[in-house]
Length: 72
Image (cartoon, rainbow, N blue to C red; front, side, top):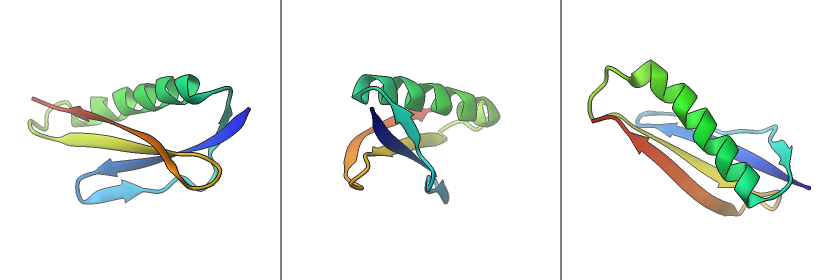
């Protein structure tokens, strides 16, 4: 089990995760990140061109991957 941190980037607004979540592997972290982005995207559904991104870091602070969603 590893702790993953999910940093949200929504244009001029961003939030750095200081708590993290313990998950089994990077696949579980990716699923968690996509679910979180889908949840946030509901609030931006009317903002055409809006881009949400999430950097996922591991316990060492290294970025494991980045996922993003764009409203069309």
